[in-house]
Length: 244
Length: 244
Image (cartoon, rainbow over all chains, first blue to last red; front, top):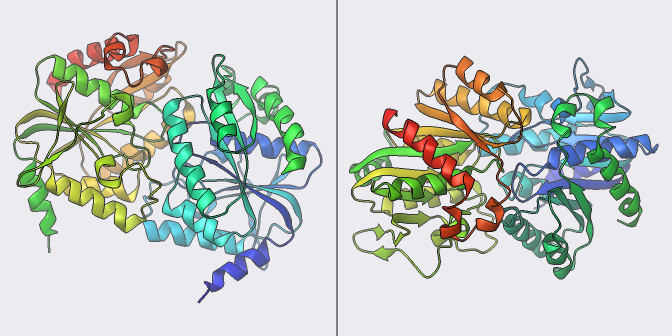
């Protein structure tokens, strides 16, 4: 029997054109920064954009975008607030900021409920900040959200790419489309990630040089939008987003 | 009723003097590199050391230490191989390198079995490379391994420290000792992490400057032991390990 919640969730998402899961093998590669700035960039280009933070392991888009004093409202489900020109929803609205080491089944229930109740209405892009790596939560989201497509963020590090390989293998086995790979925190010339990406038949979207000014721009969207990081995200998005 | 496996596991660990769980809030902060080089350093100083990689989300100590062609042997349990002067055991021996997105209960069973079967015999230090953050696996290990003490690795990043805060709160609630905090990948002068650490009553072990040469030393222990990173780990260990 098919899980009846799948129908509810996909009914909620039916007016969303593209659902992009920003994912990584390991944590700490800048996934949340890529997800946040990609959403901002697309909103600036007048697309209708939603940003959905489902990284229950370390939700951080609300810190990056300085989301304060705005909350979802209830109306036949939950309507996300608008901030910086995009619709915003996060698991922190559900779990709060407290310690809450949600056990596996609770994480799963929280994610399912959030997916089932959030009313995105019409969107060009829904950007999901995914939990890192392959966890039960990742598998749940894949199972529940039809039409999901993955954008993978990695660093130049071998260790990061090892885990990307596992994620790519899993997604391929499950026939989930991968729209591209972004190489973040690039410090020196190397074609390793590009070559490995292309060897596995995936599209290399581009690299983002390590940006020393980024840390200080966290929580200040105005400053964030002037960083080299976001400039590069904009270029990468413009070159690739219409071909997904 | 107490879980009977707890007795088995702690019987296995009774000849181990200190059990140090190297942990982080987020992934990608260099936790596995700290755990590996800390184990190497202590082994070089003639302590009896074990390194136990339980980071099922992205096991990497075998890549860092280039563990190849050595395997555990079976004899009233499983005896870890010796490599670079230390006893080594990893979840990759259990799960292999394949995709294996172990579901929650399977992860838990794998960890419990590994803890219950591995014969460390007499050790001064058992260094555990933990899964990142607060997951079911982290909670399982805490529940199962009595006398566990945490060493926390963070980067200077606000986002990394936010998740460290949650981990620290959890450990404090559970009365698990935290022996110190190491700040890795330091790029510029800042006292933020040191001050935050000391404010919460924890011991700041020291900082490790970002080391550009580290990536190329991965998998080459000889080269690794000549990096600034490992030099700094040695200083930090010498200053702090006898006071835990």
